[in-house]
Length: 154
Image (cartoon, rainbow, N blue to C red):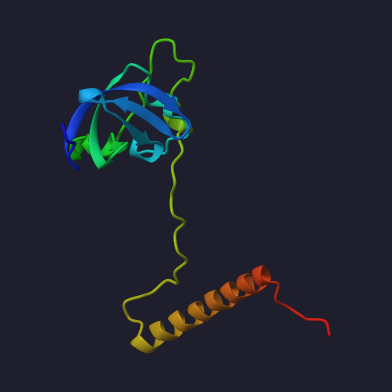
């Protein structure tokens, strides 16, 4: 049977490595689910999400002779793609993190100057230019430091 890109299949996890998991498909074929295609969250250890012998639903990303790339996260329905939870067995030593210890990444708020509705366009432009010049100066100092800029000896 010829595998088609985009088709969704059932398979069984046959092996787990640090870079992904091997999944046995129908017809005696086997493919790799790369660690980046296991879940929509950051995966540091595939064993936290998959176990050998587990049945999984996968999507075929590419199928070349001797090399089949699969994805678990793309095989999930759209409404489930946002929150994938790791699979845990009764004997699993890794306990899920409490909500208070889960990692969240929040972008730092940008510094803005208070603007009132009665400011004129020119005032807003001056404010923007001054903050922009300050940011550019800081950026240039940072870049010069990384390039080894500064005084040169003769």
